Length: 419
Ligand code: GLV
Ligand code: MN
Ligand code: MN
Picture: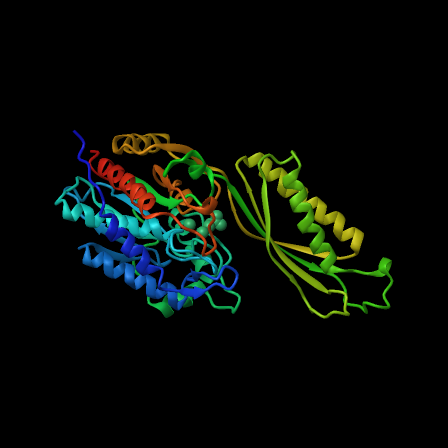
């Protein structure tokens, strides 16, 4: 008979509510208190220290690696066996909420506390970790810490990435005291599990708290810089202009048209950054920059979308006499999760009496990187307000968070007792 545990719901919720105080800000747009904890800022450092304190209080062995990922170990009976790893991230976007990433980390710490309370010893070590710069908002590349761990991004490349002020990842790690000594290519785990809020409407629509995640869709981030020519707004004939702002606006509209067409499957395209250099009412914009975030659950249709955008930009450049430079920020292919681990999560949810649906992830996650090195899957937790996320309106109920963490705890327990 498999051992079953239940996490301490109030303790998990108290931890979530405590961590959201770190980096709290007043959000003008919603009138709510949000969380702004960009990677490797002072707020992130403070939240990291709080998590490390909780890890130490749970009797865990803590180590930090050279990209600032933090791992905490609960020893098993046979320390020569690969561990079972849980994790996620505690950095947020600039307009974040209390649950994105944080649930998986504080949930993992709660799993450790629960096992301690129950006096359970496992065969394998269990670890809980958090990865550096999952959001990619500050240094421009998402899933940074986990991508370095999985070997997709070299450590030295990652450490040289800069934020808008020119500060590097490496210098910021040193400054906040998280430039660790452990090797960034961590030992390969037996399995990796990540519990995360869904950040979408599917679970709530199905009336369940739990999602078993089948995989993550492809993600493409690019930055375009459009070089035109400044000239007088009143005197320059329309046909003689090289208007960088107009070209940028055309890209935004085309990105939406692509989503509305049937040519690129379930493409989602977002221009979340749009800047027009100069910013003078009576001067034709000389330069414009924008970022394009593309998501697609089919790799071939993602490639088709990228190729279409490139050729569209080529036409725009010819039409308006502007020059367009492309910079690749991030790109990941579709990542399917391990069928056996998905089934183990599903069986665990069944045993807990928790209904679930199987879903594909719309958002990117550290799990998509760690999937390259070991069997991996994710548990999703339903959100309210249509699952809205990356805004302070993000909210998952105490019950949903606890149910997801119960699935995590019991799945980890099963994996950690596998010989
Ligand atoms: C991560 O939050 C993403 O952008 O999907
Ligand atoms: Mn996240
Ligand atoms: Mn996020």
